[in-house]
Image (cartoon, rainbow, N blue to C red):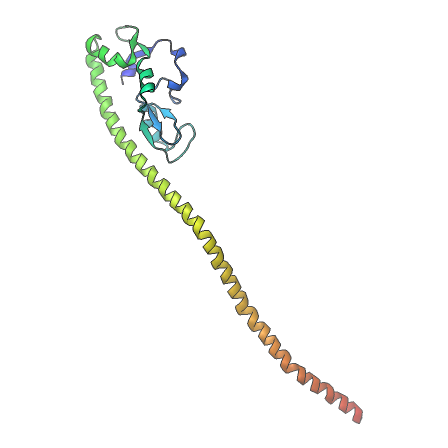
Length: 205
């Protein structure tokens, strides 16, 4: 990338909001998470997303990274002063560095070739990033559907399980209670008759 051919002037004075939390340098082709707002360099977030599909700062999953479109931030980045490491020219605005290497830097052919390679790599990464965003969006929707399904299905399952328990208890206890009642109704007259028979025998003796 072109950033390897220049250094920043007064780097300590550059606003921290313009620096990537991964490489700690000013943003290069910044990409922003649409959900949490954290921004990173193109190369930095590309390397990160190949290992983990989450935000490097808040570790939030279901990320959706998009290129920065804020003109104010882009203008601030383009106005940063840099020094060409090949010809040592200073006070070059970073946004004009590409023009510098095309017309004033003696090593412009080498730089242009690398810039073309990085452009192809960026196009490939943007396709890769779009696939990741689509995948994370699908997982987010599935998770929301699963949580919503569980939320609505939980009361139904409680009602079903409660009804099943009540039915089981009634189907067992009612027959037992009826059997005990019938047994008691039959045994009471028999026991009463046996008691009178014993009393009668005692009187005869």
